[in-house]
Length: 169
Image (cartoon, rainbow, N blue to C red; front, side, top):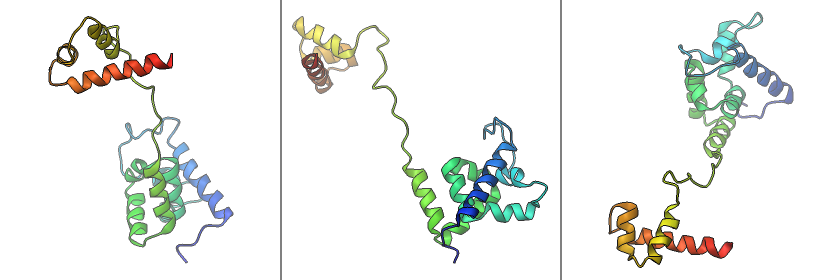
């Protein structure tokens, strides 16, 4: 069946082929500098593999799955044969390719730091607390920080944030 899981030997052979295809491009196998439409196929061809055989191997479900997991969809779309294989496998409702796409989409981006440092030297919440202690209203604080006095809710949120921050310390 076309939807069967590959054997361990097939899995290792395909991993080797996928990695070799990228290594053939050199250490900077970036899509930015690549021009052409056979990103994987051109690296797949070697002394033992003709271009016709390489095209067939690039379109195999396991190869597509590994390319999705290792490199991502944008690399598959840079190769017209891999793109055609992906389309064909999706129309066949291939489980392995669907799994690869689901995992690709579900990848989470790494979280950065909680927020940017203030450019003016003080945080908005600190400015709001200082202005409040001077007797300013929420509208005046909002006008100073956001340029619009209708942003009172944001100014109130800044004061609440400052209170929570102060309670923690």
